Length: 82
Image 1 (tube, rainbow, N blue to C red):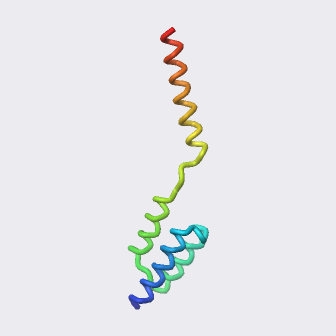
Image 2 (cartoon, helix red, strand yellow):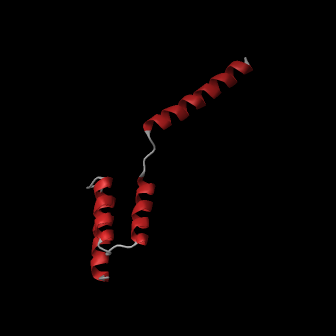
Image 3 (tube, one colour):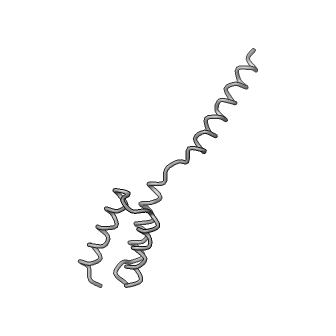
C-alpha cells in the first residue's frame, strides 16, 4: 500500500468532514471507493465513523420534548404545593 496516497486521501476526507463541504453519504462513498482499492484500512473507516458520531446534532424535536416534560414536572410540583 502506498502510505503517501493513504495519508493524502485521509487528509482530504478529514477536511471534507471538518468543513461539511460534502454531504456525509458522499464522503462515505468516497472512502469506500478507496477502501475497495486497498488504499484505506478498516481503521481509517472507523476514524471516519467516529468523526460523524461526534458531529451528529441533537434533533430539535428531542429538545422540545425534553423541555415540555420538564415544564410538566414543574407545573405538577407547583400545583401539589398549593
